[in-house]
Length: 291
Ligand code: NAD
Image (cartoon, rainbow, N blue to C red):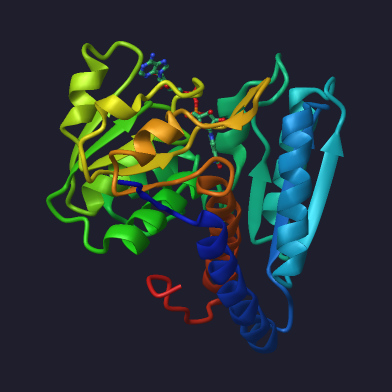
């Protein structure tokens, strides 16, 4: 048996095409394009790649990309002052500060300085609280993209057993919150979990967000499960996920590849959040749930 490969690239391309049309409608109604400000501090090569592809995708969707590149030794006060300026700028609907930040800058202080209503990454504690409570806010892009792929593949997720491996603020925790909202029975596994293989074996849905190459073995996976691999690991053999892809393919019903699975969805969801923000800020009606 060979599982279905979940084509995140294709799903993301469809979402981005829909967003581009909705951006055109927004421009007609508001007389301006939605604006996304991206702040990159320092020279981290992976971060530079992410920022470049976010800028390109933003422009391709017809939105304004406002990019700020700052030296690694910038002081925290200067960075916070830039965020204040972006918070006050009416042309900016979304603000994203690329993480990780260089040593010496308090990441949490920077995140909490962003206006929660422009926090399209969804990392501000106000948006974390909104997600936990079921209020409208901004949902972190990577887990939002994972849920879209799951619904596209499975349909209704109600009652399914889901295991999220990883408890980071960026992926694991919001992923668990979203799966609870979809009425899954959710287990969160992490570095202190006992018998990870046994925990994974119960799951209809496995979401791996660890950052360890091919750690989740095919033989752990329940036959017929759906596997979402968030991991991006650079190895000598190239880019690999957190899941033993070949092993998973022989038991699961569906698996995301790395690359070409979750990654493209993350950027598409960032554009979606920016478009949502632009409508909210301009007071223009928009069916967010259908978007
Ligand atoms: P993180 O380092 O913040 O968190 C890793 C989590 O894994 C921790 O909660 C830890 O408890 C858990 N963990 C570590 N060792 C473990 C073990 N042996 N068993 C079980 N759990 C263990 O990482 P993150 O920011 O959540 O990212 C995770 C992975 O996802 C990374 O590879 C990252 O590059 C990738 N990522 C991909 C995207 C995307 O768009 N595709 C976005 C964000 C992160």
